Each structure stands twice: as structure tokens, then as C-alpha cells.
Image 1: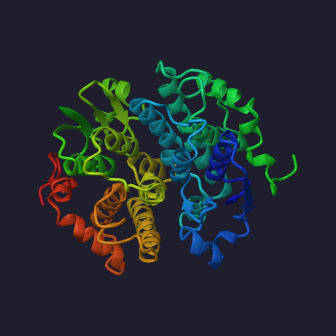
Image 2 (image 1 turned 90 degrees about the vertical axis):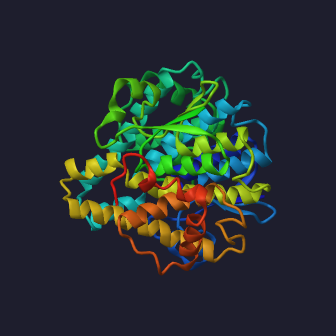
Length: 216
Length: 216
């Protein structure tokens, strides 16, 4: 069975979890407690020198890091249902939107950056929360502009089936909800988020539904 | 002819420029002066709502943003020479390393983040430079660990031909040099950077060789 080293709160693990569920792939997730520093254990660092999650181990022993690289590998090795469009320009649009959320914004709010803000720049909790909320909101605002002005946007980010871009949007939007960033004024984003949440593959992948998440 | 809206100093435009040169694709680059705020002009924002470079317009009118999405599109539409390995796990390794530099670290040092540090967090020039240098160094240190411990690393990041990961390493390493981050203690990274710089396709793509760059 596929094994993933993840963490309930990780946006990157959340994206990969949705893909496993959409593609109906059985997987076991072992939680690496980021809050307790388990990612720095030598055994885990040997697997993932960046001390980040997720790391995915496939049945043939292939060990992969970086959520977008894992999603591309899943697409190549388990192509059904497709999470990338059939045409090259559609794939480019989906990848560009995925990167907007997963590359341009997510890396700004991860623990290592918040730790630098706290330690090297002496930013207090309020300032760090404002930082996180600023970039989460910015990613959603830019996303709304891109989605609302493009005829390829439909029930999902691209057409009528979920793609890698929806996975990245969801990980961003759910983080925004956790950090109390209001985006009800962004109609396209809000609508797609609700469409995804109504699907079981997305809903049971949610951070709050994973082992280790605080009771609500 | 392919047109790219770029900027001499942009790491993301640099990556795409190297790919054009390796694939022997004729292209015209129009510089968007980021320092002068040209990226915020309404005509450019209509093309790229994120107000970032690069944006690439192909001969059939396809307009693409996000350097990694552009590189994947180039690979699909102009496959020779290949900038991704032939095997799925090799492609995953290359994409993972590309994302390490282009997604996990580059977004931390772009103008919009430095502007937030200056304005919202009142960080002076010295603090902002320390921020940039910290993340550039971190990306190279983690990269060295991943490359040095992996038998797939050879003349280049993956085997004996340049891949998308070398393009991302180069954009990161050259930024490190510009910001005076020493990485001579990282032997694998240093060696691959020199190997790439010795090739004309990389050398003539360098930021300092583009129109608008300061005279040295």
C-alpha cells in the first residue's frame, strides 16, 4: 500500500490526500508531528532532507517529496480519473493556477517562515497572524481575478471536473478559513470551494478530519 | 515568433530564457520594468493579473504565466532536447528539486514580499537583505544535501544533461551570487553551477547580460 508521511494541518499533505481519494488509491498516512519537531528526527530527515511533509513511499519503494511533483507522478502512474486536462494549453492553465496557490503563496506561511518572523525579526503573534492573513487573502484575490475573467472556469477551476488546481485552491482556501480570512466577497472562489466541499473525496481529506486534529 | 514579457533581473524569466535557448527556440523578450512599476499597467495586468513576469505568448496566441507551467508546456510542445528524464521517478525527482528552489524559496524573496517587510513590518534595508540571504542560503544548503546524497546526481542535477531542475538551481544560485551569498563550501552545487555557466545557452541567458541590466 502507498504510505504517506503527513500531518493533519499540512496544506501540502491535504492536496495529496485529495488526489489519493479522487483516484481511489488506498494509502496509509503516518502523521509527523510538526509542532513537536518530529520532522527533524534523523530517520525522517534521511528520507526528506528538507524536514517537511509530505513524503510519499510507493509500493515499489519510490520515495517522493514536494506535493506538486507527487501529484504529477500520480497523474502519470494512475491516470484515472485525470486531474490534468487533455490539451496542452489546458494543462498549462491548470499548472499555472496550481502554482499560483501552492508556489507563490503557500511557502510564505509555513512554520519555518513564521519561526524566522518570530525569532530573527521579533514579530509578535499579532504581526505573524497579519502576515499569514495578508498572503492568504492576496492569493484568493488574485485567484478570483484569474478565474472570473476566463471562460475555462466552470463548476471547477478548469471545466467540469476537479484538477490539480482545485486541490491547490482547496488547500489555500481551507487555510484561509482556519486563519479567519473572509473571502465571501469572492464569488467564483467561494462557489468552487463549496462545490469541492460537497464531494466526499475532498471532505474526508480535510485537515480537521485527520488523526491528531483538535476536537471541534 | 514566441514573445516573452520578462525583466532582466527576474529569476523566473531567467529560467524560461535558458529553456528557449536549450531548445533553440527563437524568441523576443520585452522587458517589463519592475522597478518602475510597469507590471501594474492595466494592459499588462489584463494579460497577467498577478502583475508578475514572465508572461509568454506563443505564435498561436496561447498566453501563459508561471515559469514552471511554461517550462512544462515547452516540454510538451517542443520536446527536443528533453528537459525532463524519460522515466516517471526521474521526472518526479527533477520536479521535486525544481520546486525546492522555484516554489519553496524563490517566492520568499520577490519584490512584493520585500515591500511588505519594508512597509508593514518596518524592516530596514539591512534586515531585508539578511532575509533574502537567509532563504537563498537555506535553499542551497538543502539542495546540496539532496544532491550529494543521491546517485542520480551527475554532471547536472539529474544525470548528464540539463533538466528543468538545473534551470531552477541556476536562477537560485545566480540570485545568491548577486546578493553575495557565499556557497563555495557546497561542492556539488558549486560544481553544477560552473558546468551550466560554461554552456552558452545558460551564459547568454544570465540576468546581467540582458537589456536594462546595469553595466558591470
